[in-house]
Amino acid sequence: MLDDKTRVKLSKKMTYLLRHKEGFVDPEGWASLDSLVRELRKFFPWVSKEHVLEVISKDDKGRYELRGDKVRARYGHTVKYVRPTLEESYETLLYHGTSCEAARAILKEGIKPMKRNFVHLTTSLEEAIENARRKGKCIKVLIVDGECLRKRGIKIYKAGKHVRVCSYVPPECVVGEA
Image 1 (cartoon, rainbow, N blue to C red):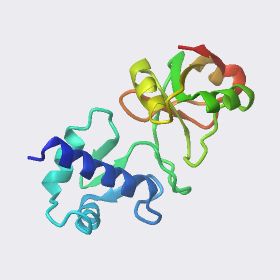
Image 2 (image 1 turned 180 degrees about the horizontal axis):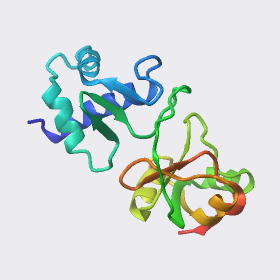
Image 3 (image 1 turned 135 degrees about the horizontal axis):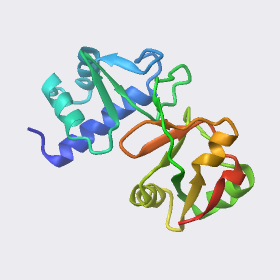
């Protein structure tokens, strides 16, 4: 069993490999557990398949998906060819945590995926606040109207426990601050 600090370090490396390493995953984002363990051993020589499974089972945000002997990150990919199949979601109220500076640009230009393949939103105000805090001291939590997105043909997908993703959020779908 891993202690919390070690589990977090291992989880961060796993998400990096599964989200950002070019050529490591297939177009749906899947990698074999064995190849993930082999790659992780370059950084953590002691790691085993059981350690990886423990990280997955104890992840409270739903970052990972396990299917047979394959694993993938459910969201956050920057590798352009990766487009995981996700289930559509129909929330009407979503949140986006950001910095005060970025919020000004968002109100003019909308929310763009930037370096990622999708825009990340959340159904949890607490998670939006937590995400915003990683971006600076002055933070904003923007409210996004899911119905507004759907009326514009923009689909919302469930990517994690509270994480929802879409291709873009037009400024008119940002309806306020929490």
